[in-house]
Length: 88
Length: 130
Length: 85
Image 1 (cartoon, chains in turn brown, red, blue):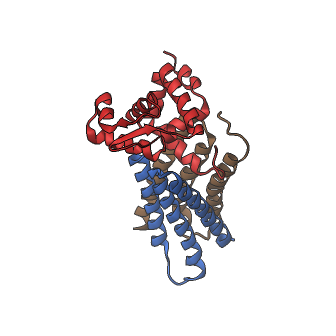
Image 2 (cartoon, each protein chain N blue to C red):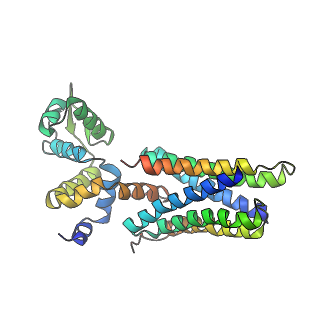
């Protein structure tokens, strides 16, 4: 059951990331690129690590990568609220 | 027809207004109808006739305009154009852009992706932009 | 250390939930409703990791955590696919 859930989460993360990636392509606002990367990293994180670390969330590699993924979201929010909006 | 011209022609704040406040082309057309007769009551039936839509759709459009504070009730089954000064200024600019860059503005109104992106990103701003 | 990081993740999700919910109540854009729900459930999912470790060491909440995360993503995808008119 857990394996199925992880697979489904990976697929859903990929899809969600794709929507944000498309938003980035359309608007050139890097806010969306950061969100896309965050979702993709989290999805990949679960799949790749299931084999090695199982479901043990204590494994440092698990939570370091998750920290990175959520850090990207925080970075996106901070970036959006600092200074005038720049379109790249 | 150059794609780049379309996106450069519309300034950012106008683009934002269209994406957040103009939900459809009929809405735009209805707004322009009221705007052409400022202060004068316009019956919802007239809106239906002038826009070639059904009464129900006309009523829905007028309700949307009312919620957006673009029109206010003016008697039985009628409304009049009555935005406040800031809104009126923005609507003037939109109307102008619509006339001079019809394709650009309608493309923007129909652009679901840009609309969703704008809505999502706006939510993450701590302070609301004017 | 793990608990600290997952708490931080839960906090990040809570911030997103708050911003999106505020956005929804201001604008009534439906997309923001679904996105807010998504991040609310992600907050729960991250909080469950902490709870799993600290408060319920004998029981594994892994399946619940995963199910919550999947539901969260499902709600977000629903909003992205259906809303936006």
